[in-house]
Structures are given as C-alpha cells and as structure tokens.
Length: 240
Ligand code: CA
Image: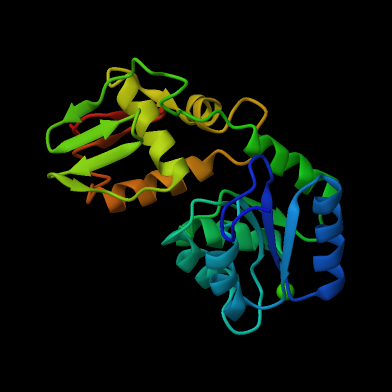
C-alpha cells in the first residue's frame, strides 16, 4: 500500500469538470480506457478544492459551469497547479474571447468534439519534452540584468526573489533564454515547448507570453526581458 497523498509513479491523474453528466461520463470513460486515473467533478465550485486534493496532471474543463465558471476555475487552478488544461467551449467564437482573457488554458476544444481527438491532444501534450535538469545537466543559469533563469533547478528569480511560473511559462522562458541572440517564431517555440506533434493554435504562444510578462513585471512595448520581434515572434532582450 502506498501512503496517502503520494502519487503513484507513471499514472496520469485526469480531472474532468463538466456539468453535463452524460458528457462527463463519456469523456471519463475514454480517459479511463487510456489508463488514466479519472476524477469527475460536476460543478465549478467543487473543482478547485478537488484539484488541490487530486493534484491532477491534466484537467478537461468546461467553460459553462453553474456557480464558478470555467474561466474562474482555471484562474484559481493556475495559482497552485501546472496541470495541462484543455478548456471545452460551446461556440468557436468563445475561444477568441478566452484567448483575449488570458485564462491560462493550454488548449481549447469546441463542442461537439470527438473524444478521440481530445485523447490525441492530451497524449501530444503529455509527450511534450520536459526541459528538466536530468536531460540537460550541463545547462547553466543565465542572467538578464535582474532576471536569473536556472534550467536545471527550473527556477527563476527576479531582483533576488523567486518567481512562480507554470510549466509552460517556464519552458517558454528557458527556451528563449537558452539562445538570447535568436528570434524565435511562434512555430519554433511550439516545437521547442509543446513538441512537433502538437496540434493547437499558434496564438496560444502569445497568451502564455502575456502571462509570463505579467509575472516578470515586463512590458510588451518597452520590454526588459521578452521582446516582441515584429513579423517573427519573440526573443530575449530589451525592446528597441
Ligand atoms: Ca456546461
């Protein structure tokens, strides 16, 4: 028997937050068939608390929930979890609105969707290369004025204070920091961070960069750290 609260190695913990019970069960059964440990939650208000208990690796999150909606659940989740979040929306145009709101989801799917496609996307996300220390033991911390990025410890400091980033935000920053002289296209960042098989939308890169800049107190126009390269994408360095 394993002690309470200690994660089983190799098991993917998935949380499905969806108030339509039939859809929740359907998605849940697909995830179970994939060998995931599945937790179904039928309303937004319980979702955040359950996520603290379960510590999910992936969260399939409906936007339209009674009580707390998907946007608010995602915001609260992001304060303590770096789970991959796929947001389910009822209409295509909601996705643009959500991207504008910078809610911090990793991907979006519009209903009705194919559970197979959902699984394919989750599998692609789980295959994402981890820029962990064990893979790159010789990687040194890099300094950009008051900002320090340590790829081995996966830590970031700003003015000597640790900055808490999600896994995606960290991977984006570490990718840019690794080659500060290089302007990365969105596609190059997707390949470096999400992996080549990822099938999402390029402007999710902008969403995560937006979060990252906010956490680094950076400015899109006069950026200290993550600079926009017009017509290309992003690079480290100050704006000019
Ligand atoms: Ca709903």
